[in-house]
Image (cartoon, rainbow, N blue to C red; front, side, top):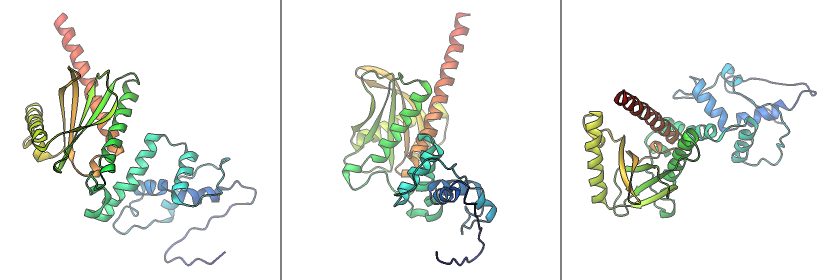
Length: 279
């Protein structure tokens, strides 16, 4: 209804009245997180210091086919994203990648030290203290169960220090735990946590041969065992800095894939050794 003045370039699009409501769905897509996700990965100009989009990049943004989805009643961006997720039929894992890029990756690139991804995982509000790590562990367990089957019993423990805030966080993922499921917290004092970190650091250096260990690299994955309900169970310890970007759901999917790959290689190597021994 009103005139538009473009400071640089613009694209004019029109459809015949007999065509489906493509324009409405185009507006829906361009106003969603999907457009930001796509352009950040596909457009060099958009991903630059001063983002701009040329006509070719703009027209390449995917638009869902018009469907029997009511567009009325959309009042905010959250409703737009919900509608686009349904229109494209994104899976939960796919939508997680879109959300994490929009909420963490892009602000980390544009905002620097003040970005949400560089904030500590522990908040002043105790009720929300481990919300980030709980989401990380929940996603991690989902990936393992999707790969090995829903009947695989895995659980996760978040180590929490109520006395002091260490610069790192540690999570343990336990395998073959028949009496435990889901995510739980394990309160631990600073001295106990430091002692455990030193023990894992020694094992990490012995196995990987890395110089400086986890205290220098600050990101480590250590395979060990833990006593759960009087049983020794295989356990993987994940140690990372206390920053949100290291504990996102998309990072959990990547870490879980690596752990699953290591488990398959370990199983294959074990079977090969057993076969050679029998031979």
